[in-house]
Image 1 (tube, one colour):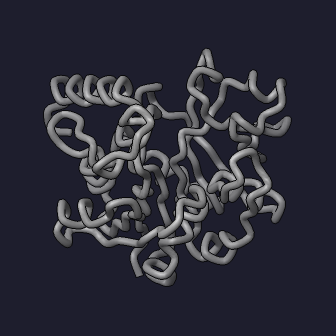
Image 2 (cartoon, rainbow, N blue to C red):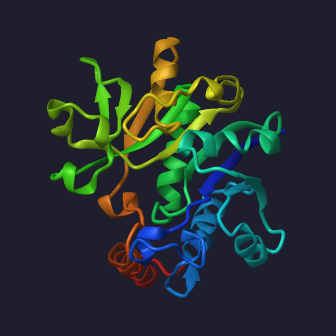
Image 3 (cartoon, one colour):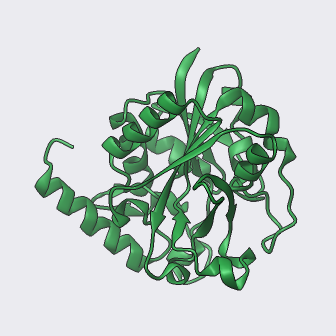
Length: 256
């Protein structure tokens, strides 16, 4: 059994990348700095020391499979029913194969390997059920990330997606970029408990935090080292920004 495996969610259609129209390629196959977005996400994972990688694919999945040509494994999300459903799609491939599962979105390739390793170190030190990254925004509504809800002791107790937030919750500056480490056996035992009673009518992966807290499980978090790590790619403008970040890092850290 592997110590860690990564599940990278890569089933999206990318309509926002194509002026709202159906795209001819999956979202994660749009390019930044000469390579598909998903290539950067896989590279990040390997650079962080995780070699067992499962891509959750869906829309035009054959294009992703042809690109990697057997270098990674796949799980198929036939219907787009939310991020929790996407992660659950990897269970047949990974259940019993690794002790812990890293999950993040394939269109968020900007995390630094050293930040991922730092989260893994926190996970190994604190031994929680879930370890996760967070990010602080001065203008959280602009970024539209889910908000991190903490108790009076600073412990994460929930994540509320922006569309489901109360006016008070919208003011929370600590947000969820969507990078997690789960205890694998707990994840597979509990992912079917997700429900769709939210504004999107989807199975949210973020609700796994609420499930863990209600069970009395430990959830720990740490902020990313810089805001740029947390930025996802949902538009041509964000695609350009991501490319700028990657090229800048290549100039300052040529070995990374």
